[in-house]
Image (cartoon, rainbow, N blue to C red; front, side, top):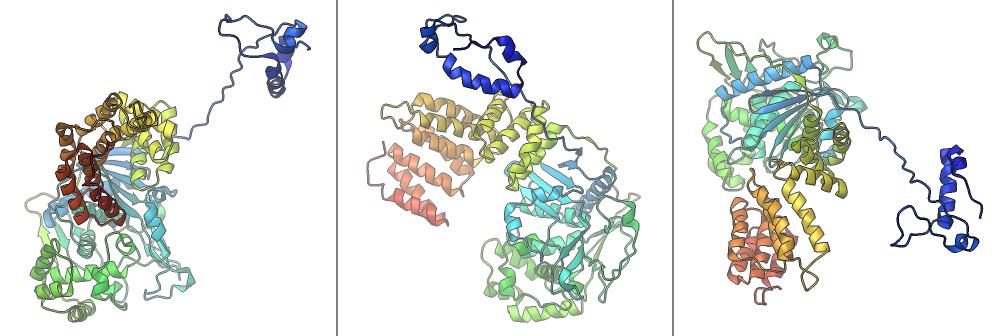
Length: 615
């Protein structure tokens, strides 16, 4: 065998060196005996026969720098109840936030909504560049067509809420064939007023936090009325119709603008010059939007669900949305005022019973058909009274300007990661989080979000590292602990230490429950915490004692409608041999569960009630 001097290898190129190294190592190097001291070469194989020395080469370490995604530029401030993040222009952002605070003041005085705010809120204001599209839930995108559009959304989570508004879009082209103009094959271009969209999302958020959220049609009618509320320096006007039949709008001196610009407050937004054939259609009041359009029959109208595309896409003079507007407006502002009390009675009863024509007739004294005829008359000849609320004294309705500052990268990355998880698009958050982590972000809240996003993307090892760091840093994010505990449980189940080779031991159970008991002390509570506690006991060789089961009872009291938790608790009770408790839980699950798969699992458990408790 020919000996290759080290100085010759050093002179070779990196590529040639690698080829020689990998071709020579199998022949030159073999594992050293355990007793061989480091640095001592032993002759084996052909080398031993030829009595030629073997040279152990130095370890070659190749390092490469991974290019990190550039940081995103967000500005931020705080207003009562909300943290604001924006990547739109600072000028446009300040204007919108100031008007939003004025709107909230007006709303509290004109139409107070008694809501219990359970979660902190964040406003995300997106500028140009398609940033808003990432926040559209996948379920919404599946329902999208060119007949509907969206430029705002509210993402409700168990521990946070995000209101996202597209400030980068001023118009949207939709194939709406029912409008009263020649749209051609290109569709019609509608105005997008992001001021109004923010107002409606805020009201939608408040209504979702009420004890009994209203039916979708009533909520949409309220949203349509409130988002068109006019706020003047000395008074607030609500209920007035600004659209004029035959085209155009009444002039308004309100301090809240109706934006027809490009979302960035450019000088071009001030240019009112219109190109023939390219006019945009404003968001009209119902008296204009429904003037020559067929109304929905009330059976179909009242059957629209909150998650329907019709209820989620208000842009484009949506017939259902404008019909909601017409009905609620007629009941509250129509002259003479004869339907306000019937409307209030109907909404109160709908909190306890389903909508039927018999119920409607009891409240309004009219069948669907007769009321629809009356509604058509109201749309064609709208006799109504709007309301003014005057500010007393020398005060004027206004809000102080807010100062913005560049957002810390870890905070904005965590904000985006949490919001995108709620939108069902966690993959879009990974590059932003990776870049922030690579530039040194280690805040516990940031680590928590990074771990949860990685877990949502099935990045197991990355999720484990980030969640472990977040737990070590004692993050206040409750969702981290059951997620990390679930990983520990899977590890334990993969290496069961019980004598049967299937179950985990109480010793393996303890560190899992330690994580879950930390989560129990953090608010808001999460059903996943109690579900993971139940799964951990089901995997253990020892059955829980009554005191242990009390913890699961705590979860059932907090989340009585969570049928998956009820099912797991029934299995734990069955394992304990408490047939009475298991039977009660199973009967409750069969009575309340609407999911056929879950009902099947409850029936399987019921068949085991007469059998001995599971080992």
